[in-house]
Image (cartoon, rainbow, N blue to C red; front, side):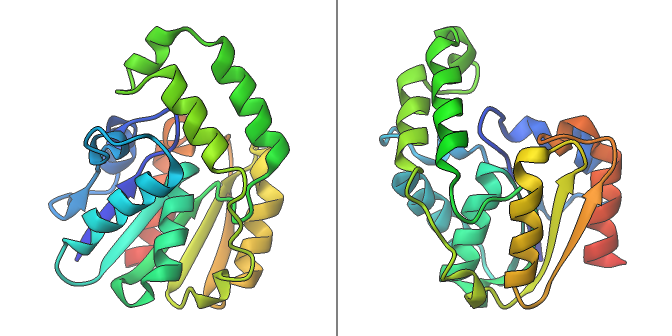
Length: 206
């Protein structure tokens, strides 16, 4: 079994290191860098999803996907389209219908950030802005019922923006459960990696 950890926007694969360090055996854990998967293609959600889908499809057997924020959106999208490939799903701070106001705020934040901040993440300011714009109309409301695997949905107690959507999504997915993580905001893998690891291990192997 392979466990795929998918980072959020503004993060990279190294953002999972501390969480994984609390999980014990890591031989079967994969942490792709999303922007490297694009191999030079334009940074739109469609291109990113296609690249991610191809990455997962190339892995033999079923997989467990753990995704945060953007990573959770990609994981949810993949589980909707390829339910037979996903054994279990962990969605951290997910959205299933993109909040236009939130994306507008994110877009404006990106506009005023220095270009150097984006280069550290392997992309450019214009590319991040394009990705944000390309996600505005995403809506999986009618499709989430197709997720058939056991699903854990997590949200930090300080993540006010995503908590309501996380709880609703847990009701829409038949085999889902919701847990709130104390002392954590949106980037749970950085805010409280130990409690996140405990929740994931309890769900997957408890």
